[in-house]
Length: 347
Image 1 (cartoon, rainbow, N blue to C red):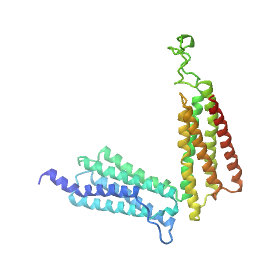
Image 2: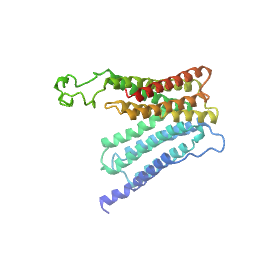
Image 3: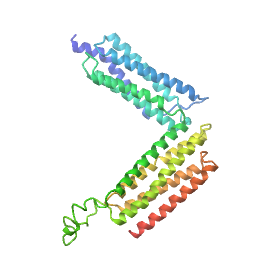
Image 4: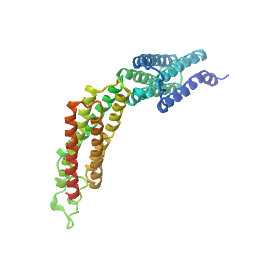
C-alpha cells in the first residue's frame, strides 16, 4: 500500500467526523427544539450545556495535538470518536431548551452553538487539507477559534429577560451610531466644494464647472431643514429603546410563559427600529430623495408606535412607566405631523 493510500485510510475517521459536524451544525441552525412535556429546569440545562461546551473545547485541543504529527490509524479513529461524542452531546443538550423559555434566549444559545460547530468544522478541514508533519499556524488559529467560540458561553444571557435586554441594548447602540453620523454630517460645511468651484464660474445655465445647480454632493438650505426635523424622530427612536431597556431591566419577568412571550414580542417589535432609522438616514443623504424620506418617516413612526403600544400593554410597563410611554407616543406623532407638513410643502 502506498503512503498516500495509507494516509487516506488513517484520515477516513476524520473525514467522517467532518461530515457529522457539518450535519450537526445544520440541524442546530435549522431544527426545532424539543418541547418539554414535564418540568424544565433552566439551571440544570445551563449546567449540562456548560459541561458539554467544556468537553467539546477539550476534545478539539486533543484533536489538534494528535495531528501535530502523523497519527496512527488507531489514534485517528479514537480521537474522531471522542470529538463525535462531544458534538452529539452538545447538539442534544441544545435541543433540550424549549421555545417556552423564550425565543430570544433560544436564538442566543443557538447562534453560540452554531459558532462552536462552525469553528470545529473549520479545524477538521484545516487538518484534512494540511500535510501532517507539524502544528501549523493555520491549525493553531483554528484551534483558538474553537476556544474563543466556547468561551462566549460564559457571557450568554441565562434567561429570556437578560436575552431581550441584551438585544435591546445592541439596538440602542446602533441607533445612537446612526444619529451620531447624521449629526456629524450636519456639522460639516454646507457645500464641501464651495471653495473649489466658486459660483462666478457658472455658465449661463448655472450648470458649468462651478455650477451650484448640481446638489448631488451637498444639502440645500431646505434639505438641511428637513434633515434637522428628521433628527427629532431619530432621537425619539433612541429614547424609546433606552426607556424600554430600563423597563425590561427593572420589571422584566420570566416567572410565567405569558411574561416570557411578552418579552419576545418586545424584542421582535424593537428589531425593526434600527433598520428603519438607517433607511431614513440613507434617504436623507444628498441628493435627498423626498418621496423615499416621506415613506421612511411614515415607516419609522409606525414602528415606534407599535413598540410603544406593545410596551404599554406588557408587564414591564408599571405605573411609573406610563408617563414616558405617553410622552414618547406624543413626540412621535408630533414629529410625524411636522415632517408630513414639511414634505407636503416641498420645502
